Amino acid sequence: AGIFVQIGLLPNTDFLKASKVELSNRGEIMINDRNETNVKGVFAAGDCTTVPYKQIIIATGEGAKASLSAFDYIIRSGQ
Image (cartoon, rainbow, N blue to C red; front, side, top):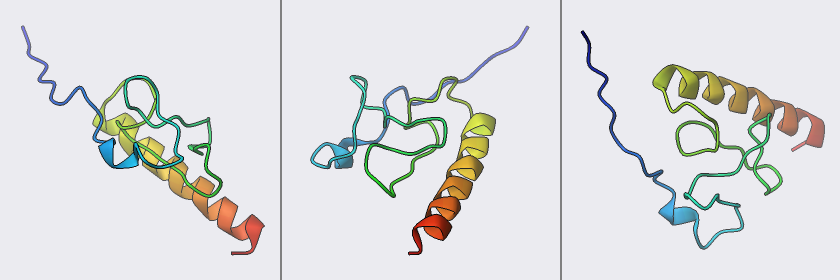
């Protein structure tokens, strides 16, 4: 026997609706495999993105991946 508690099915991305960041039809931030959005230099991670399996351990790993991708972007772009 066991229980799985799930909270929040809707991503908290309403603040992006007026931006250029592309959202899915469910309001998730569209990202590629490097956590890049369609806006150059903007990265996203976690349950608000299109990554499957909305779990804290996956969101944590995605956050690490997004930070490494952002670091790589900054180094390569000279910003």
